[in-house]
View 1 (cartoon, rainbow, N blue to C red):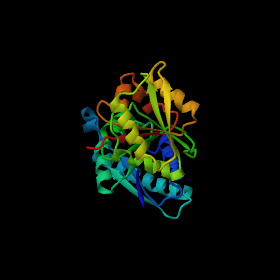
View 2: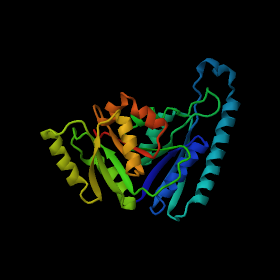
View 3: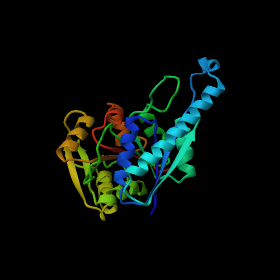
View 4: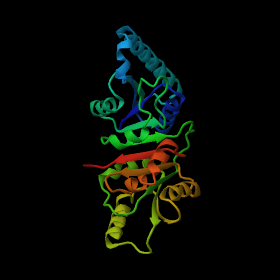
Length: 278
């Protein structure tokens, strides 16, 4: 199976870190990597001071940078079955990403934690959290700034067992199979006993991941959910954190602390967010 990976870039060191991680994560897989750069002018109050020739120059420079980035990635890749494409747009980042996902059948978006650089008038998408929350067509993998690739031997999946999990777990299974990673189901123990609903969902979850190495871990309910997750990551040497983003989910509940804002901008390991399936 060929993976179609979308890599939004603003040509910063942060986005290059995410690209390097993607190349290494899929080093042994056939992939097409799409480098996407969205350049849009958003400060309408000063728009009259920007000439059309200036805008055309910015477009030309961005396309040249995309080509340079492609050549740089080709030099880093160790897989002859890695292909590279570029996408340049003057539309807002979110709509550009959505269109690319649909047009190129993207299976995963991989991006860094930062986005905007340079003048404030030009918006790339510094709010990674907004991208995570808005993109509902495929998973988003967020890579910490400067993070060096580590073989993902341990993958954490926090859950409260209040939801039945089905095909939306497929990205988690596919991720696990890349390196035969162990899936650690992490449950914050807020009660001594699970409800009937939670017990049923746990049994279904076990059945769904039975073909992957896995285990069930119970996290003590000390402090904030954010701190519990961070402690779990450190205690078990977790390499990737995975969550499903749906209404009234664990991910939404911990946002109130707000863990997603903190993890989204300052993750200590790669963070895969899977959207809810409609």
